[in-house]
Length: 329
Image (cartoon, rainbow, N blue to C red; front, side, top):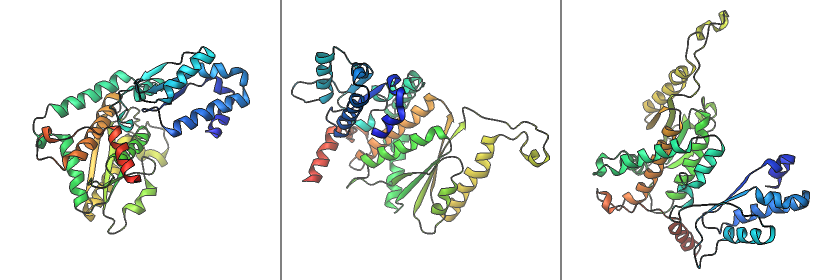
């Protein structure tokens, strides 16, 4: 945090600080907040009030009898500096890693120029497709969860996920964290999600994939229609003539994605392929929300016998905290 603040230099005066803790009790968030304030006091004490004007808080609503340091922080700053920091409220039953489509994710999305309405439409469409399936067997979400359980039962330990667009790289890391915290615990059958190195060609990954007996599942994710596609123009150079009129995206699929998939299938490794129709907020949100639902269903499906009514679809943060406390004992 100290290094990041130093790198901002004078731009710290143009910086918005979004302080997020679902419970209002996260130690790392408290320490980061302390570091930011201490840095401002050391470097620009006369502009401390300006710093407080540049803070937005996101946490669950204030509740009687529940301590929340962000609400207490807001009150103290209001009393001492007469600065009323805005608070965006997160629903208390949404666990931290499932909060992407709450103010936690949507506020950030708007800040970086994404259309939060389109994101929410994609998530809602996915949810409606899920709940409108009366039978578990007809549900794509449930079948994706069952596939992962089946692969794990067949001793495929690692699910190596390659994405073929830079915009999916952070998405892939989020999926690994979502699955790791939710599923890779004692008693839940699951492959271990490993986010691939980089995007597009994945040359660094191939040695790992091509080892014998690696019991690895390959997952490939790409857009059918990327946001920025180029068809190579004619540039009158003989050495590059074979590339003229060729689509770079089509070449990626033909020369990288399909050959790798074919090779691994011939070796006996399972390959899962996800093709997102078009590179936009709606499709990205649909995919991400589907992954969240798969994670939730997978956690409850092993005690179910074929109907949604018997599933516990609520992975709530307090349950995770209870689990961690039992481990520490």
